[in-house]
Amino acid sequence: MLTIRLARNGAKKRPFYHIVVSENDRIPTGQALEVLGFVNPIATAGESVRIDAEKAKAWIAKGAQPSKTVLDLFKKHQVV
Image 1 (cartoon, one colour):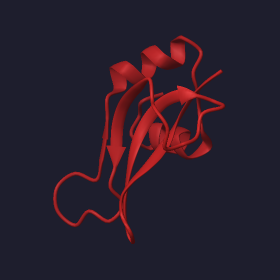
Image 2 (image 1 turned 60 degrees about the horizontal axis):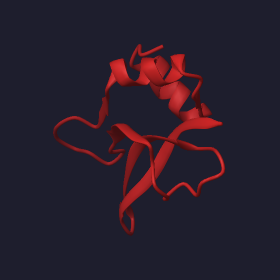
Image 3 (image 1 turned 60 degrees about the vertical axis):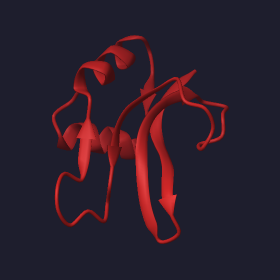
Image 4 (image 1 turned 90 degrees about the horizontal axis):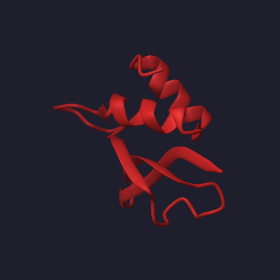
C-alpha cells in the first residue's frame, strides 16, 4: 500500500520535512517513490510549505493514502 507522508530531514533542532510517496512498510527516512513538496515549520522568511498539487492528485487517484498530518496540510492548501 502506498502512503503519502512526511519524511524528516534537517539538523538537530532544525526540522525540515519532505512530503513523499512511499511504501507503507518502509521506514520514514527510507527511499521514496516521489517527492511532492516540503514543509519548513521554522521558516521566518520565504515560503514554509510547497506542494505540487498535480502530482499529489495523481498519486491519490492511483490509490495512495495520505497520513493525517499530510491530509490536514492538503486541506489547508486546497489540494484535495
